[in-house]
Structures are given as structure tokens and as C-alpha cells.
Length: 264
Ligand code: NAP
Image (cartoon, rainbow, N blue to C red; front, side):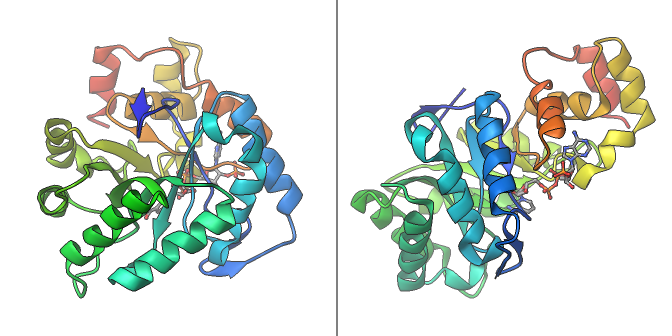
């Protein structure tokens, strides 16, 4: 599928926790994280999700290091934290993220969370100017419900809002109610974060039962279900888990089994 004029895999890789936590870097495992991200690329993953907040920017440095030889081939998503949504702050954040990633332009840049204290029109004006200057190629939002997404789409005059990244898993299917139908109508791609329920789907017996028919694991069944209407971005820094994640692509659950999952 295509996003921001690039061909992307139906699944991406999340990077939260690699290289630090909430605004705090951790340099102790850099080589392992770089090698996990590169491994995901080698296994066919072409979309990578990060944010300025992750590791206080260090996660972006690791993503940039891992992917520097394949930049034309991958789509990198980064995000601006909600305390940086005024015009000048947003521009500064994007320029800093671009530098840390080591890219000419950030492929897809998202407002990480809405902030009611800053007019959306001001943030979108900054995003549109960043596209004009080539600092970012595309923009979107994250954690926007249907009402806010509609507002963002109608505020953007010059370029389209291309994606909304929201929590979506087999345990948390709230986007199915009105967000996914709206996004489909508006041509906005849904990116599904925490798609493994932060790891808990791996031991789900009901998903295991459905997976038997296809020779697939609960993780693969859960991700394949989400791929029907979104791009899930599971996070893993373990090669065997990345292998399992990659095995969620290239086959499809039947409509009947998807309906069973949507009633779990
Ligand atoms: P997740 O992807 O649902 O779960 C990640 C957890 O699952 C990790 O502990 C990982 O451990 C484990 N895991 C991965 N593959 C596994 C497998 N095959 N078997 C068993 N366990 C497995 O949760 P998440 O990290 O919260 O979400 C994914 C990404 O979404 C984040 O990394 C981030 O990029 C993004 N995100 C965005 C927002 C936002 O506000 N926009 C919020 C949250 C997350 P190992 O590393 O050991 O495999």
C-alpha cells in the first residue's frame, strides 16, 4: 500500500522504549536496538514509528542510524509532543527531529496528542509551512477521535491530513465505531498503536484456537485482523518476535473468523 507517495509494508515497527523512555535517553543498549530495527527492515518492514519524546530524541537517533542506508525505501513517522504545538515550537521540533533522524525530510510528521490550549489552525499552518520548506513530506495526527480528525481535515487547506495514529487492538476496538468509517471516507490512513495489547495477545487462547486453522500464532492472528483496516505498528526489539510479527503478513483471515474476533 502507498502512504505519502511511498510504498509501505502492511505493518510497521514501533520503537517506544528503544533508547530510553519518557523524555529520558538510555544509551546502554544502542547496538541491540539498531540491529533490531535493521533486522525488521531486512525482513520486509518498511514503516517505522518514532517520536521526539521517545528517549528525549535518542530513539530518533537510533532509527536514523539503523535505516540510513535505506532511507528511500522506508517511511519514517515521527511526532511532535503536545507542548510544542505553537508555530515556532513546532517548527523547531521538526527541525530537531529531522537532524536527529539524519534525513533530508521527515516522511510523515504527526501531532502526537491534541492540545486544546493551542488553536489547531496554528499547528496546521506550521505543518503546511514545513512541507513547503521540505522539512517534512506529509503530516497527520495521533490520538484524534472522529470529531477532532474531522476538524483537522477541514482546517488543512493546502495539504491533506494523511494519517491518524490511535490505540487499536483486538482488546480495544473503539476506532471501529466511528473513526475507521470516517477515516475511510476522508482517505485518512489509520495507524494502530499498541496493537499487541502491549504484549498480552501472545497468550490469548481464543486467538490461538483461530490461528490453528491457518498455522498462525495469536500475535499473527491479532495483527492480521487489524491489517484489514489499519497499519499496525507493533514494537519489538527481539529478533524472534520480529520474525513472528512478519508472519502476520502475506495471508488473510476469513471474513467469518474476523467477525468472531470482532465479537471477542
Ligand atoms: P505493543 O506493540 O502492543 O506491544 C509491545 C510489547 O509486546 C513489547 O513488550 C514487546 O516486547 C512485546 N512483543 C512484541 N512482539 C511480541 C511477540 N511476538 N510475542 C510476545 N510479545 C511480543 O505496544 P506499544 O509498544 O505500546 O505500541 C507499539 C508502538 O506504537 C510503540 O512502540 C510506539 O511506536 C507506538 N505508540 C504510539 C502512541 C501514540 O500516542 N501515538 C502510544 C503508544 C505507542 P519485545 O520487545 O521483548 O518483543
